[in-house]
Every structure is written in C-alpha cells, then in structure tokens.
Length: 245
Image (spheres, rainbow, N blue to C red):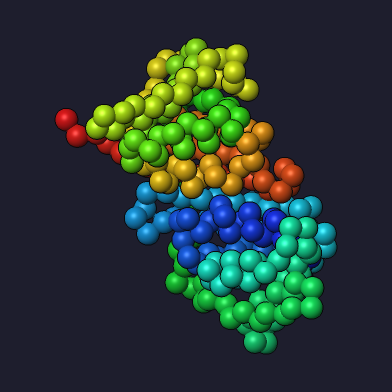
C-alpha cells in the first residue's frame, strides 16, 4: 500500500535533484518515508535522497519498491502550480502510479525494479569541511561556467576557495572563515571537478540555505543539504577530474 498527499514543490524538488543523473529511479517506500539512491551512467556522480513521512500532508505506506520514469513524472508535474497538492497512489493490480493534481488524473506505468542496481554509498575519508551559503556558491559557479568546463575547490584552515581557469580568463571566489557557517580543516586540500555536474548538484538549493562540502586531495567531493523544510536530506558524491601532467 502507498497513498500520499504532498505539495507539488516537494515532488518537483526530488525530480530536480535526481534527473540530472538518471532518467529512471527506484524509490524505496517504507512507513517512515521514501528514499532513493542512483548513480549516473558514467559512474561520475551519485545521489542519495531521503524524505521523511513528515514532509507529506498525508502518508500511508507499507514496504515496497517503485520504479519511476522521471521524465514522465516531470512532464506531469509541469502541470502543477506552486502550492498545489498532489496525490500519489500505487495501484497494485495494474502496477501503476496514480498521480492526481486537482481534477487531473494520470495513471503511469511503472518500471520493473529487478534490473535496477542497489548502489552503496562508499566510505570516504574527507578531512576538510566547509558549510557555505548556497547563494555564494551559485555566484561562483555561474561565473566559472563562462570561462571553463571545470573548477577547483580548495579548503584550508582559514578559507574556502573556488577557482576556474580558462584559456584567457580566470574566476576566483574566496570566502574567509568569518563568511562561512562552519570550517574544519587540518591542512590544505584541493580537488578538481566538472562544472556541469557540480552546478546541477547545487542548483536545487535556495540561496539562503547552507550547503555542506567535504573535501580531500584529488578525492570525490561530498555535498550535503536539506530539502522539504528539513524533512528531507540529499547527499551527492562527485568523482574528481585528475589533472594530466
């Protein structure tokens, strides 16, 4: 059984977080809420998302897996206005997800989850941590997109820094400790990442909200933030680009 009523913005948020990496996702449903974990086809990035039942206006569920085509769901959700309530219901007989927005009803065929992998979150030793206002990161990334396809992130004991270098131009965003919400670093750490992936990862976060970044030297980055008024959480992992000598 799965019947839930939720604000459209929350479903749109799930799609925005997940769809840059995959077109299809396996949703794990329990009485406590839903979760999903997905890795992009190139195995460069992973998303791990959890949404508590408290994020919903109404929620009744037993344990199950739902394979959902995110492109289809996104198409339906484009018809919902901000603040609209959306009802989701699993039709076991037809193996469909029934989506209701006002008087509109869409019965959506589900994907067999048997072929969908169960990805595990790897344990990473990432010694540096910075908590940054999303708005600052958005500015730095937007400026970087104009000059390069990759950027470096740097954390030391005094600051967090974003740097991008193109053929003729550079972009630098340096935030000292007093402009950060939190900073922990036993030394200097730096890794290089694809701007496209990193931009998609932080795009869903509102400017005033915090983003936690965990970093090592030439290691994957871990990015964490809350969603759905802190009733949900997202973790991204992104593999580094290794510079050629």
